[in-house]
Image (cartoon, rainbow, N blue to C red):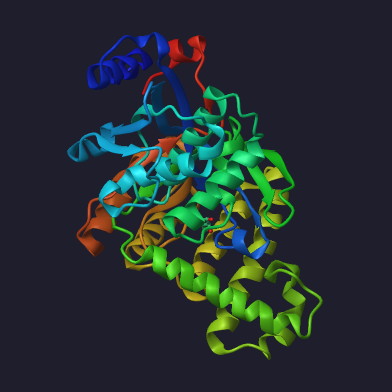
Length: 397
Ligand code: GLA
């Protein structure tokens, strides 16, 4: 456990000087409850922000140098760049995320550089949006420190553009939106076409959200992600010739049979997932609002099966984890979450069974895969912000 004071102290031991000009920001990670791989198809998603995330202690410099340090990547040491050379450099590894944000704001932040000390408690590369969290915490920090005055939605869109254009992953807007707009104990129902959203109270009495990390590295995830997106785009072009639609999610399940006649076998499968997942997400919100957790869990299961069989973004490890979870006492629902190909599953588990859930799933998962999983019982928290004195004193990292 590190208290907030410690991140400021850690900053000072890294960069020297006094703490007066050091400011501290936080951006959460996110978990998506349902609505997977449809944000870039104009669909509805239901993510929530987590209490775990990325902390950033930061101070302006008087020259134009940029110094990046992450406690999570200590082996990389301090990564140095300059406001005049903001290009994606593979040697800069994780620091390309904040560099991308700086580059997209470079005409609004003047000529002074920064010292950045990042410290996160979300597992990296596990599908809990550690990258969106780094992007948003940097964007909000620069916006505040320079009085730029961009709105939250502008910062969310800018962070998505950084991911698309600077990093090269053609992601949708769900992660950055959840990281920017999350609220404690609420999921966010987001229409990714219009960006209309509303909060859905997560009323889960006597239940917890347990995230299970497969610890399977998401090897080719980025290229497969871009491929899925490209297939959706080609399917949409074909469907537009017969249907008055702008997005795949404008189709409904009743139109699928007719739509499938225009598509090749791969496109058929992908479109079936997209259309049914969008409808499942809307149903999931209805049943959640009626406190019907059983029905919510059934929709989570159907979502996993659709991602496994139609969208084909699951993998042996994710399947092994959810199959073990579905058998456990007290499990309301379990599914893969995020982009897939590794990463995490999300589970809703009755509190009194959480410990046996972890023990049994671990045993079965390890027997099947040879990997040791990790579990995080998470709380749903607020979106990206500067931390105030009061929050600093309450904070336990
Ligand atoms: C990643 C992307 C999101 C979304 C999910 C899948 O997390 O960043 O935009 O597409 O995958 O739902």
